[in-house]
Amino acid sequence: MRALVYHGPRNIRYDDVADPKIAETTDAIVRVERSGICGSDLHIYHGQGFSPDVGFCVGHEAVGEVVELGGGVRRLSAGQKVMLSAAVGCGSCAKCLGGHIARCENGAAGCYGLGQQLEGCQAAYVRVPMADFNAAPIPDGLTADQALMLTDNLPAAYYGCRHAEIGPGKSVAVVGLGPIGLMAVETAFLLGASRVFAIDLVPERRAIAAEMGAEPIDGTNAIAEIAGRTKMRMADAVVEASGSDATVSMAIALAGVGGTASIVGVNLTPAFQFPMAMAFVKNMTFRIGTCSVQCHWPELIPLIQNGRLHPERFISHHMPLSKGAEAYRLFDARSGGALKMVLTAD
Ligand SMILES: NC(=O)c1ccc[n+]([C@@H]2O[C@H](COP(=O)([O-])OP(=O)(O)OC[C@H]3O[C@@H](n4cnc5c(N)ncnc54)[C@H](O)[C@@H]3O)[C@@H](O)[C@H]2O)c1
Ligand SMILES: [Zn+2]
Ligand SMILES: [Zn+2]
Image (cartoon, rainbow, N blue to C red; front, side, top):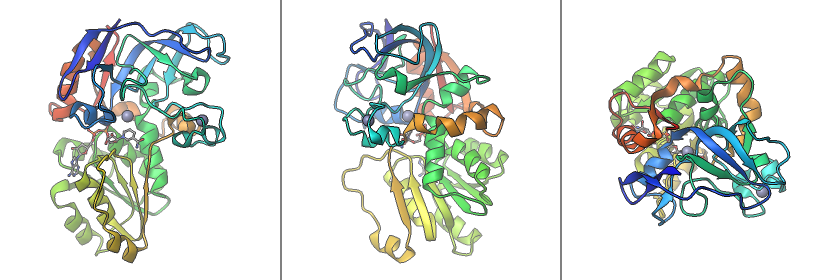
């Protein structure tokens, strides 16, 4: 089959690779119809990924059609249109069932396309382990694009907002307005935020947040700007959706007294300089982690079905999988209006 393969920094190519095969009775093989490029894929693209591996197929967001099932799969059937969860778990331990896949007691926590361990889905086909837990039929009334946004980005935004304890009347700052940050802006208002400061370096992305009612703030001077606008109170809740040392530090600084900083952006710095004294004085809460994507579906699906959340509005491009390398370049450059990049089957 054809797939996008990581060969090293800024070197993703459309290659011929082996077709995936059923390896366990609980597996499914899905023919990928759409896949997304995530900010996490950009970390890999920059050579700052999750493993030292090269030569693996990238991508962890997909919707498609079930083409083959292992004998132990109970809830899916061949020909069904499904959405995959970027978070892969065993689906049978207490932690997975309790909504914390990263804490899987059977060591099955994982994600597609981060290394050789589990091949990615920016490909013609993908193998889905524990398919009953890690994939689900596309819900009634949802488009393929909406379902694709449920495979990672919208749950990540929602989880970031819940971790930040956003609620009625709270002031919120969102650092980084990629697809996840922009969906965090929309979700923050849905959860009752009274005002949302929307921070990015890219003016076009700030403008999209402003259209949703947020206050756009340039990332180069955000701390002073928000201190001025809040009379030094800063924000009750901060969602960081970028992942650099600078943006994580900014998120901690933007939390007010008793505030909460919720880090969604992936930051793999081994020895980040945490401003302990500042956090101590502020009595603040700091949360970080990976999103247990499918555990948020029961809450998010009706919000999309009933028009409360519109994740598809952040899709800027549909491009064929064969043009994947170009899609990566555009998303990385953050130019030409590039926002959520969707790759379609060739
Ligand atoms: N925790 C999880 O489970 C999870 C899930 C999915 C993605 N992620 C992570 O979420 C992050 C966001 O991903 P994304 O897909 O939205 O796209 P993205 O990574 O392209 O978005 C990052 C945004 O941050 C902005 N930015 C960079 N430096 C900045 C600065 N100094 N000040 C203000 N803004 C700045 C960029 O302009 C960009 O708009 C990535 O780090 C990704 O790895 C985490
Ligand atoms: Zn992702
Ligand atoms: Zn588990």
